[in-house]
Image (tube, rainbow, N blue to C red; front, side, top):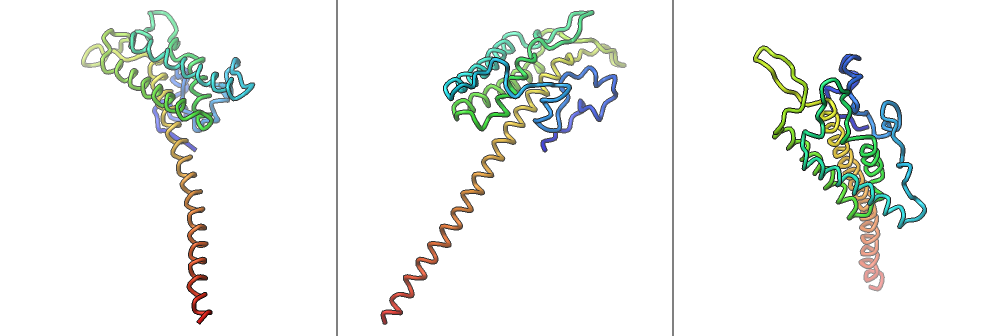
Length: 214
C-alpha cells in the first residue's frame, strides 16, 4: 500500500475544507476507480484490438500529457486563474488528463521501454513546470488572504490539486518500477543459486572419478 502524508488527506482536514479538494491523495492506486475520482481502467476511446492499436492508444495518451505540459510552460499560473465570483475548477488538469495519467501509470509495465521513458519525462516535466510557475508566478493569480503583516497571495486550490496529482503519479510510477526491478533481481538470484548448486555438484563428481580409477 502506497501512502503519502499530506495536509489534503480527507482524514486530516475538516469536512468544509475537504469538499474543496478535487484530488485528495488516495491510499492506493486502485482507489482512483471509486468515489470521488471515479476513473476508468482505460479511456472510452482506448483501442485495444491488437498490439499495434494498443501501442498507438498509449502513445496518444502520452501526447495528450505533452501537449498540456507545453501549455503549462507557456502560460504558467495563468492556467489556474480564478476570476472573482467563479468556481475554482481545473481546466488544465482536467478529468481527461487525470484519466490519461491513471491509465499510463497503472499499465506502465505494459509500455514499451521508449514509451515508459517518455511517460517519466512527461511527468517530470509537468512537476518541474508547476514548481517553476510557483517559484516565478509573474502574475498574481489567486485569492488574497489578509494577515497581520498585510495581504498575501496564495495559489488556487486547482493548482494545489494539480501539483499533488502529478507528484502522486510520479511517486507511484517510481514505486511500481522499483518493485518490478526488485522482483526481477529476486527471480534472477534464485536461478543463479540453483545454477551454482548444480555446478558444484558437477565438480564434486569429477573430482571423485579419478579416485575411483586409482
